[in-house]
Length: 314
Image 1 (cartoon, helix red, strand yellow):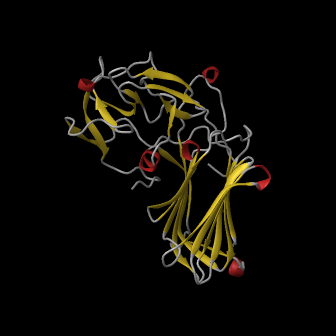
Image 2 (cartoon, rainbow, N blue to C red):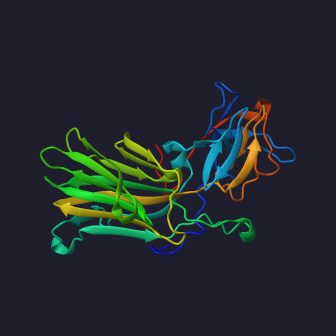
Image 3 (cartoon, rainbow, N blue to C red):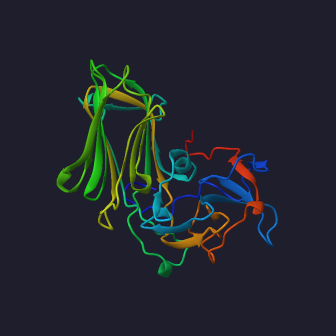
């Protein structure tokens, strides 16, 4: 799929028949976001679903965001990676990495841009049952191999009128500064932090579940939540990496899409658990008749035994 295409049918990252490790018996209480192996009536073997609602909670989805007892529940980063699907990955065919230079010498570009329209539409679900809307669930991962002394570069992401700019500086006093922007690039939130040593080896920017999250080398720098993306329905996701000074060499860079939950009432957990599949548009789970599972239905907790190509997970 090329930049600018609609991402209406991203590839499924987990498949029936994948090998998993099931820890039989519950050595600890079931927690939200656990992958649980359950026994299903009239179905052979085990079924794997994700726990989203705990006993006593009423679960529903509004504008793609999961709520439990009217409190928004945003997926933590490890869960985002487990549900992520690759959109694009770039490097360099000679294995030396992608080079961006502010001077543009030797035919090196100063900028990398990715643009694509992402929506919540699922082609495997009846169109009449869907209220298609813009999806802002993106994971952007940058692996740096080298940065020249004094280098500065900007990572920016925009969804219609809203976005974020993150400026990394590798000068005498390395630092990172960020600005969350509204219409006409009006700053809504900003901050700055000095970095120990030089710029990080790995940077992750997430916009999943209406939460900006910035990490460097697995250390969180900030999070910022917003109530509604306010973006036009047809606005594309635009990611941009611009070198403003010096030169950087990227070992690898990738963009992932994280599946949103379909809107609507799911279930009242009662004294059991509310479960959803990681491909919720086509999964048979708690949305069918508001079903809930009891503790004795849970055989154990699950850990996948492999990483799907195209997805990085901690």
